[in-house]
Image (cartoon, rainbow, N blue to C red; front, side, top):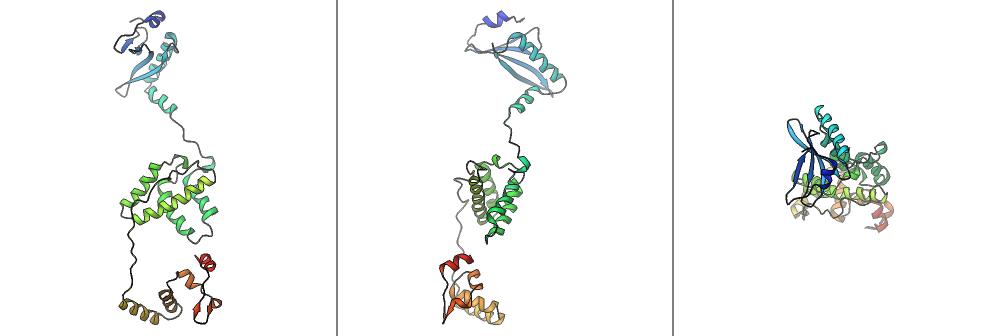
Length: 268
């Protein structure tokens, strides 16, 4: 049909969708919906595949402007381009560029280690595990692109490799890191919020048998100072290694080791 401005404006809707080609402009179609809404569409081929591209609604886009736009689309298609894909890419939400890589996961974990983990007894372990599992997979990603689904997939992947306990530890470390990012106004909220441990851990604690205690005591005698006596202290007191290793003469009064709560917390 040779479309005219008056024809386009007065064309009535039917109970079916109408797609009317414009005889004066190859590839241009007027689409009329049963509701009466009208729009312009261009059809072309790219890579041997038929493509459709909606230009705009009528009367927002007039017949003359629709023809001009359609000719541009057909010209681009003749050059091997895909105009519809180009428009879609242009409209896609842009991931904010990180200035000086400030928002990269690897950069932020480095800052987390420097400003939060430094000086903590477990700091080196936390940093090493975050590097091993989080930076390895997410290092180059902008932190704002991380979703709750990403967190779950990361932990499930670790657990599925047979490291359930490790997955739960990474969850705890990741929570600390992401909450730190929230505190510093890097994130509005943590994507790990509500993510539960991947599985319940089975305790491996058990009580030594009398024979095992005797063998251990004999091994401590054979080991000698300082590790032998230290092993005996650990067995007899049940205290942490760090506490027993840092025992001071001033804490021994008579035959009793006086370990205050304050000292115990400092040594952890």
